[in-house]
Length: 500
Image 1 (cartoon, rainbow, N blue to C red):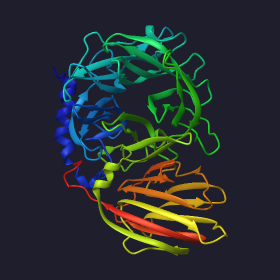
Image 2: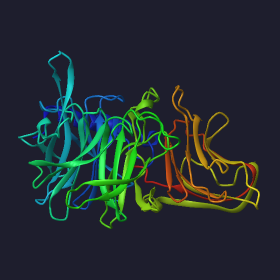
Image 3: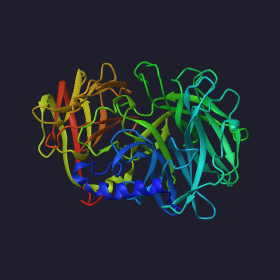
Image 4: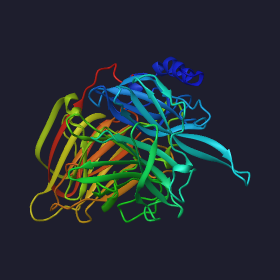
């Protein structure tokens, strides 16, 4: 039965979400029906369709009591909006239904596993959160919370674990039918850990092991974990809070970490071998993945930064968007990512220019726009290298967003200083890329309010939101020195009614 609080949210989004024009949203990046959106939740396959839930506060464009919004898709690009799935309407979750996962059950129903949050006064008189793990089971639209929730509490934590920071279960089913879940926690040393649990039915769970722990090396609390096999390795994702910067690999604050290693199939332990960032841009957090029917590992993430959530247009009736879904691979010990191939079905007119000499600044016929998929390949014109190469997008006389490559430093820099966000926040970030004798390939995906850059066929990715007026659609190229450049640009075309 739908609770009064959930029905209120559903009525509100049905009444007010339709008032937002499609032109006021991204064309193909997911946004909330109305109000606020943060972490992706329950990214999963159910009855042959992709389901994606999201942390949701429908009543304002600010974070509030967390609900779960809900959409589904057949192609990972165009999404059908469904009614809100969860509301904080029980005693164990009345302070919020925080992040979690989803899995199809043997009986054909779908199970959501999420963190229920309630407030409690401790012996010193201070009020703090108590976080437990809960489940709800439904038919892809309506979900009933389990009568004996929560299914995991403080008594199920290893010694030294925190009931205040115990959240974000990602659940999956192994071939033998056993359910597993990875959950973020804060250890006795004050830093993060990822805990592994298993269950036969989703209702009774047992602790297996601590998969990996921060030990105060990569940030504090480890949020939003995901764990999966990929190309002969196992990959553990997490989003740490309170990170210290590490060179150009990790930036300060809330970040993301990809741990690549091997798993012990008996003890379910994990041995890390590689540590790297997942995304090197300004806006990326809480990624979650699924396995497609054809065997691809696909990831989506919140394209935002907790430190910059105040930088939004005051009139905006929605806030928060997700990255384009990305196909993942492990190659040469690194994580690779590119937009899902389904995006190519929406490519319209192609404009191609080959072997264009660039020394100074140029623009090219037919190369402009704000909803596009463009690949730029740059190489030196002989033995002498160039000093830098720069692409300016979303340009007019006042605004621009800049992507710059320095071959001598082996760095790419993104800069949205003049991209419409009139707030004193971080606007630039640089990251290292592998040098290829001065040659670089940059794939740039734009969608009204965002720019995603994929370097050298996905070896690195960098995401950022922008709020430049849509009329700023010019693109130019500039070299400090001489280069040859190839450009292949596709307009992306979507039905007008999609994501309205």
